[in-house]
Image (cartoon, rainbow, N blue to C red):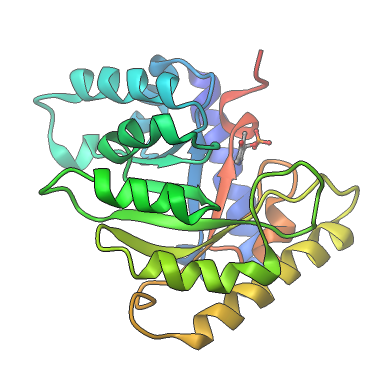
Length: 240
Ligand SMILES: *Cc1c(COP(=O)(O)O)cnc(C)c1O
């Protein structure tokens, strides 16, 4: 578990250095710890190191972990135990209820039908579900996400749903070999993000999140304007 503490320090240092190089305020980049396949113990360890945002891909695995963490942190001071859970995996329509009930964010909205179900199934009394559209920014075949030229229309429809809060865009580009090519793809996402944000209007008041960059390319993503990097192996080690 000491490994996780050291890894978190290294990832935070990478983010700080990238912000410095890009002349950006590090407060403008959120670190999402991607804990898919990691044990609840590992999440608890990262939490103890001050990491509060976690991303999960598989709904069933995530819900078990969310409940386990809630049990462990019951009775401790809220400031030390508050976790924000982000769903970053594909969502089948038979899983929307679990997602609406247990997550704080969903970053993988690519179909209106799924967004409508999440809105309808968000429990009464819960804060609106915070959502990002997943955009297939490099047109990768067989990849989840809406095409870039269809993103704005979907954003308008999602922004109108009552129990969702539209927060921005998320991308997972194909791995690219070097900084320049990584950055070029991330710049395209940034341009799309700014174009949609500048349209503004009702439901776009908090359109402020550009989720891009992972362990291998977080520096390029931060240079291109990422506001949230999603790091798995860099924190929890290689997935088995
Ligand atoms: C697994 C995953 C990550 C983290 O990837 P690493 O390369 O382990 O940092 C980020 N985003 C999504 C959507 C993922 O599925």
